[in-house]
Image 1 (spheres, rainbow, N blue to C red):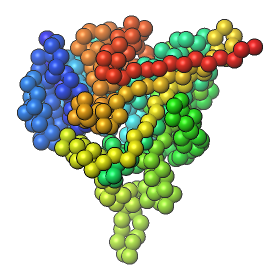
Image 2: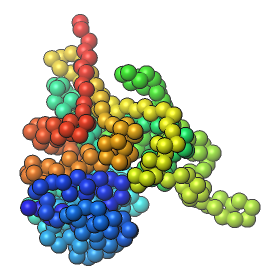
Image 3: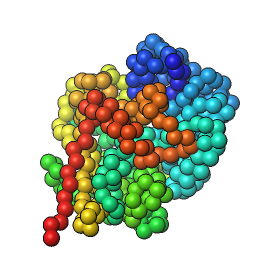
Image 4: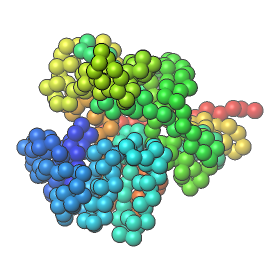
Length: 406
């Protein structure tokens, strides 16, 4: 029987905790958060949970709460990753997180490299640290590796996520608006022929054709996949030369307008003698993402206008000396269906359930490799288990191959 700590029980962490509560191999859950209300809500609603208030800025605070745990699931912002990894090593626990960046003290690429640089420490301790385990990154990395295994050599990997939700109640983002605006205003990173290239925000706009949906505007977007996949290009991705991540949707359009107006700046501007940080003002005025069931229900009751989305992983390579493109489309419940199934949003459903499945692999003893690594490193049987379990949650993948005949 296992004792597991979920540190940070917001939208994703609480989803993981709820699913772990159903696992017979788990006998105790430590649900920790800086927000006492969030931690106590887990204790109140989950039979195996104990709510604990933890200040993750203090490593000793994390260690105290994590004593006896075999796994620490880090659901906090990436700025806390080093502290939580320190605590995992000192308590002898395995480690899982959902993102490597951005962080406040390093560039995005260096933030990812810093996490990976701790692999030897975890190896020496006989521990596993699985990083970047949500939907993207996370599920996307597993699917990418599956597709890459089809080709002999890999030329390019392009990951595209389009999120189109229009409700009568104005909800521009279904996760933290501050995080969303920050991500979209950041320089994106592309892996190109052995180098990491930083691109200006909203770079390379293009109309991407999605099967069954049509063309939608997509732009380059800051994400971990180009970084980890670039670092591991020769090791597990058959020498891939180019990796990119793109995002699109009404939230992106809104952010681009604000960006061009200077409203996503983080430096103060003078407004009639008062210093105001535009990003702080926009983040404050933007409606927060509905989190609790009654809040989500209120949005649905007011009415939906339209829901659409696409999650595409495209791998281009060669097989038998000929060009081959492998398109993998992720299918998952939309907002209305996710709420009917689990009383959560589509964002929490896909990201939280995808993250939980990696946690379940720890619980079931399916991950044996030691050290720090992202999901694209998982072996064939591990990936097969993950995808089979995902299908049980209505998260499936349709794969199409295209090749030139000559």
